Length: 205
Image 1 (cartoon, rainbow, N blue to C red):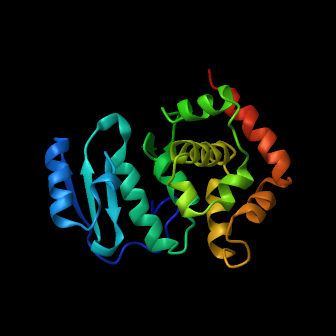
Image 2: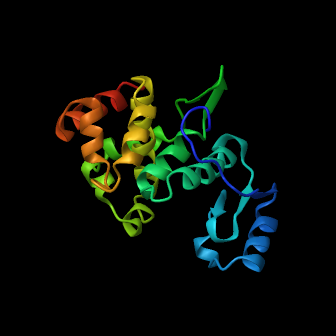
């Protein structure tokens, strides 16, 4: 994260607690954190107020990389919008680190995108980038996470993700959605970006 995005690193050590067994994970969370049972993530979370990451380890889900990304982003970009934060974390669930470069790769999250297309429920980037937390973490959360992830992967493949991250962070006070910054980086209006992203998403077989 330091090599690629984060200029301000965490100032404190963050504890990481990992479980293999779901029941033990759930019991620990209920006993130690103020999280209702129905709100417990099945794979893990980063608890900002306690500076702790708790993981129920499932290797192919990439939950450890997901939560570690949250930790670094929150230190470097404290006001980061949730859609951007979750998109980055989801991007790194399936990623490689080579020659100092962290790169997200194709992942299982494409399933939510395909389902949205099949059911005619796909919505554009403006909806994603303007959504509030209640909606982002609501019934369509798997779709929003996936859409954010593949937008960032699209930028990554154009070698523009780092530039977009830095621009968004430095001009967040001008546009908290990130839409203006995205249009500037890609030199297109959001409607045209939507068309390009849809074509990109449909290119995966």
